Length: 244
Image (spheres, helix red, strand yellow):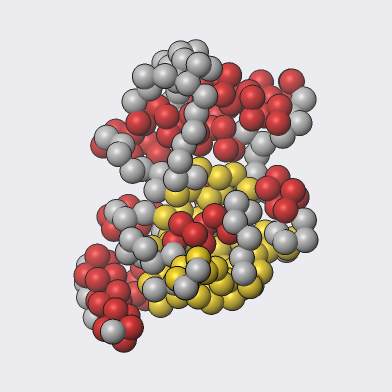
């Protein structure tokens, strides 16, 4: 479980995150939505300890990220906005490298790696160097690398961005599998069809603040819109009108 309490982050005079609070629960997929510049990526970076909040608290399985960042990182599997593969290594070698950084013993490493290669349908390219990979192949490798240490909490930043239809479909099925395993899955996306199909809860951020935190059905009911995209636009429009 990931809990965010009153997070604040400013860059000079710009308040990127201004009191964000929400919870992403085990066995659920939580969507983090918002327009560009809303503070989503800054929030995610504070969750996985890449940035330190000016104020507020991040708890992962009850552990304070400020007090024990290393233990929090062990409990997180993160697909960041920058995939950052080592292009001279094969997909398997990229995965193995991160497994060894996490201290996995070799027998456990091999078993876990092959399970991920199979689950993500990577068999055809797992032994190729990642230089020249398609976007889908890069994303799958980065996700396998992020999950090699078997974390209970998974953060995915725009996981299907740039993927073709088949790769997107496979990745959505994999996310549902993570949920079925009882993991906490938090992901950001701009694709409303994806959010509607996957999310148990949706957290909407605008102007650095949480403006909605509901199930998809509750958001539609709250706004009087049958379509989730229309509900999102109405929420964001109302917030921008108040900010003006």
